[in-house]
Image (cartoon, rainbow, N blue to C red; front, side, top):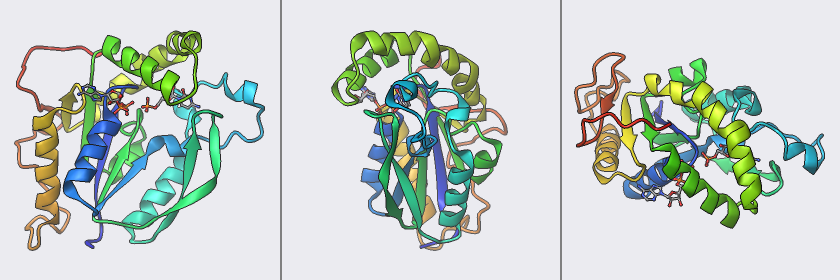
Length: 238
Ligand SMILES: Nc1ncnc2c1ncn2[C@@H]1O[C@H](COP(=O)(O)OP(=O)(O)O)[C@@H](O)[C@H]1O
Ligand SMILES: Nc1ccn([C@@H]2O[C@H](COP(=O)(O)O)[C@@H](O)[C@H]2O)c(=O)n1
């Protein structure tokens, strides 16, 4: 394993396809990739009743335990394993158990606000924003929340209009400016192939950039995101 690991941050709105992209990258690259869902770092709300937890704004940055995330990323980057919390969406709280995560060559941090925190941004080698139209995202979310997260339709709609949408506009969408690349729609084959190519180049023995002075195979202008997309027309995600 090379120290430090190559760290990718994948952000974007709810239902944009972040998990799908990071899973596809992890599966294609193989065992050397560790996925870190930001959701696992939602604050422990055991001191609240279920009804109170159900009312929390889970799309505001204050919902996350950033210090724990930074500490655990730091440890992984120093080659030390961490005890990662696990999250249960059905009860709006952390699970009792933690999972031991070993350091690996590639770490993928994935979540709505992965490109939000300044200190986390400094730890990322490649910053990705998955951009998908809001109507597509809400349709995906309704299906997922009802089927996988034990929610009812009315609750999903109320939560979306009350907190998810306004927080997306205020906190999530603006992090697009921090991205090196923007991937449209989620599991975009070309974009995923490019990510995998980049990761494999980082893992290749004798990589001339292995000292940390890394360059992306594409030309990425400083502070100017490169859109990995055949369509050059503007496509807002909200
Ligand atoms: N490019 C895509 N085309 C069609 N469906 C997709 C695509 N990307 C993701 N999905 C589906 O949308 C839903 C939400 O995707 P997910 O990756 O969980 O989003 P996120 O992690 O951003 O919330 C999932 O059911 C997933 O299968
Ligand atoms: N108890 C919770 C915690 C979070 N959420 C929602 O999850 C969304 C983030 O996850 P994605 O996979 O969709 O990126 C976020 O928008 C929160 O609203 C929740 O509903 N309940």
